[in-house]
Length: 239
Image 1 (cartoon, rainbow, N blue to C red):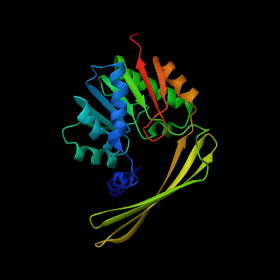
Image 2: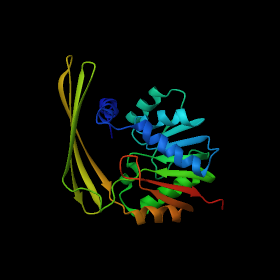
Image 3: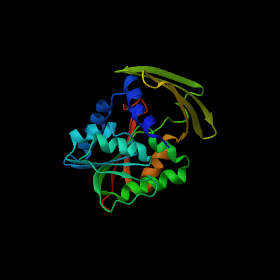
Image 4: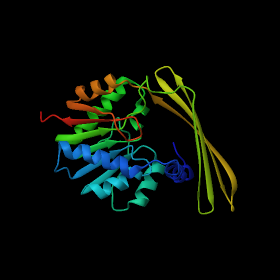
């Protein structure tokens, strides 16, 4: 789970690496409008610091977020004080209402790790969607597109703070294990080091599609952005 400072630098470094949250949110909206033009309400599951949520707030009449990490949720809430940001787990949350759209961005669905958890979460999403509602999931890498041993890095400076991030990712069974190290430097505190480990499931396209189908969705895979991994878009059946 992220600490307060790590939550603060998380979005900073990803924006510095060129992640275009607005473009990704706009592509999701385009796919949603093709299927439900009148969509007005949206829940962003695993919303993190609220970067996509802030973009969705400009595109839909009513938005809300759900985030497992309390520091991340607090960061998102501070950035969007008028938007409900709930602390909860995508596997078992219950908000007592439904939405026109549910999104799960930035490969966060992969943290479920096994297929039964994936199916359970998608069913939980379906419970929070109106009939005909749209579910958009930005997946993690497929087994055949994942790059074993991948190294990534970047440095960004904003004001008096400089942040560097380096990651190394390896395949571990049906998942990827990614080690991430941060160096954060500013004049007042000097240089500080953070590190974290992410274990993220490598589900196949067929596994994603089967989870959507099991939860009562018709599903399309769109091989476009966000993030180069494509997008699964499902419409909940009226039954």
